[in-house]
Image 1: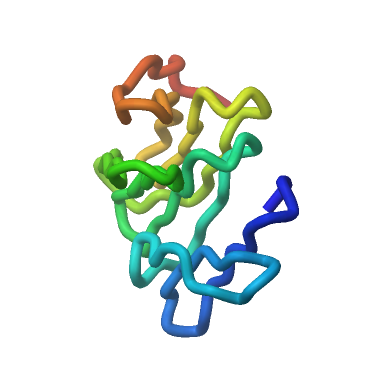
Image 2: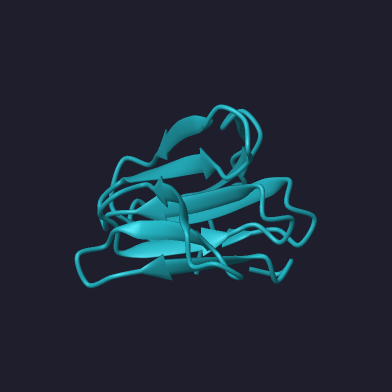
Length: 116
């Protein structure tokens, strides 16, 4: 991770884990099975999906683990966390693009659909 103190790994089964870089000690298991994941640049959140229509936002802080679930009506095909670590943008086969707040998992914007 960007702070050099933690390492995030994902195995073939899709389990995502956070490790202490200096000792190799497991700090946290995150999300469970997943096909795609990303970590916010401030290292406060991991976002993971299993290839269906839902994503989970999981807090990586030292306190209680925050968990939020966000979804589309069809399979999610892409996701990105904004550089300021405030928002998650997800796109779906349902042709929608949604903007979510990372803190709280609330839908903050649904841009109009793109037309060809």
